[in-house]
Length: 48
Image 1: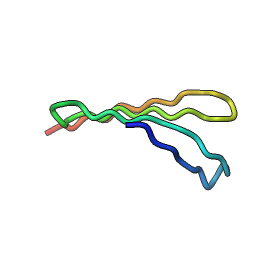
Image 2 (image 1 turned 90 degrees about the horizontal axis):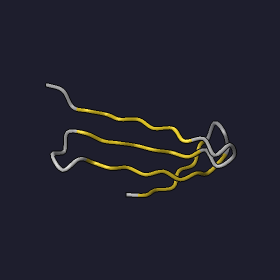
Image 3 (image 1 turned 30 degrees about the vertical axis):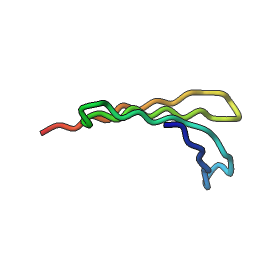
């Protein structure tokens, strides 16, 4: 799923994507800084 975001602290809008694994236990998030083009990724995984 693609999304747009607004950073209040930086005063910029950007784009990102979110992917949830079929099992529902992992979320992969990527955002792109529209000024520098830098990609930031985060991978969250549920543990018991």
